[in-house]
Structure formats: structure tokens, C-alpha cells
Image 1 (cartoon, one colour):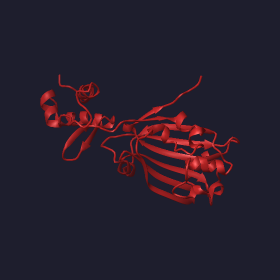
Image 2 (tube, helix red, strand yellow):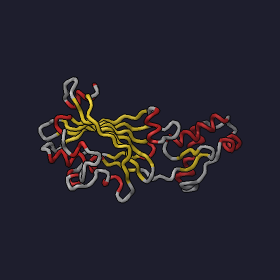
Image 3 (spheres, rainbow, N blue to C red):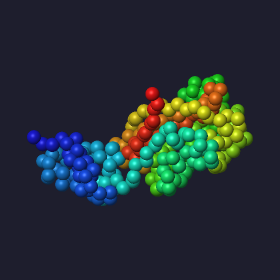
Image 4 (tube, one colour):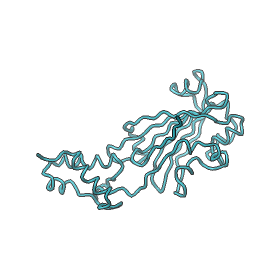
Length: 245
């Protein structure tokens, strides 16, 4: 019986994880897989697509499929949101990346009417204004996350939060200066396929899913002061949580 796409992908994955195929190596192409496994070209293509979707491989147009060279980002939510980080003037990304290179591009900051879906989480009335902060995070030259934050405009209008560069410690540090220090956070996660614009902005490979995280920040009084929706390239992230029983 001919191998399935999943079986072929499993065999290639073992070659990658064992070190036989190293980062940057070219994977066997569709014609080679057809000959080796006696399968249809579409089956061979699906096998390679599975590895791309897992973040283990990348396609280069006109060249082939290669073992991905990018090291995964370990996102430890508990550590990155700790006050001793942003409260000390450090980016919350420092907990994820260490010395790896980070840049922020496509920063857009504007006041707008709150979208309907943020009214409930931010306890806003219909027609209320929010400050919208949108940006793309790029690690070692690869876009890995698109983030859009919504903050009640009446709370942050005229503050440094309205600037593209919010300064040391970022938005959380500026909220603390306004007497709105975030002390509690909730995160909701779901995996999904990206929209066209998300695929383009993250330069995603074919059939690559994303992880969407919606994080809400609350003050000690229980007021929601920031709602951020993050869209992550699922192939480059490991999500880690520490839960106390």
C-alpha cells in the first residue's frame, strides 16, 4: 500500500529531529517523494505542506522546501507579564527573547469608535472612543506577531500612550503612571487559519495556522484598561504557562 501524506511527513520529521536534516537543508522535492514512496504528486505536496504548517519547514518559490532555520520563541505568559519586568522599564518581550533582535514595524496609533466586540470586555457604552495601537513585531528579520491594543480613550488621551514609542516599560508602565496599574490579566487563546491580510503581514507559508490571543488587563479595582488581540505565527511559538494549584 502506498504511503499517506501523514506517513511521509512523519518520516521527514524524524530526519529533521534526529539532525540528519539540519536548518537550511533542502527537503526532498515532490518528484523525489513520488519516486521514493510511489505516491501521487498531490500526496507528496500535502506531506511537505504538513511540515510547513508545523513550522518545521519553509517554502521558497522556485527553489523548494527547506528545514526552517528560525529558532522557536518560548512565550512564558506568567513571566512576561510580571511587574518587575515592565515596572523596571523593560519590554515584556525581554522575557521571551533574551538577547535576540526585536523590532517593531507598521506602528499605527489612532482614536476611533470602539468596535462592538470590545465594548463588553472593556465595559464601554456603544459609541465610546478607544485608542487603537496596532503594530507588527519582527524577530531576527521575521514577522512573528501582529498586535492590536484597545484602551478607553477617556483614560489615556493626551498621555504618552498615544505616541508610537510609549517609552521604557511600554503601555503598562504608562498606565501605572496614570494611576491605572495593571495587576491582573486574562488571556483567551484559539487556533485558526489566518485571513489574507494576516498571512501577508506575517509572511506565512501556505496552510500555516495562527494562534490568536486576546489579553485583558485589569486594575486592582477591577477596571479593564487594555484589551490586546495578538495574532501569532503558530509555527514559531511555544506557549508556556505556570499554574499554581
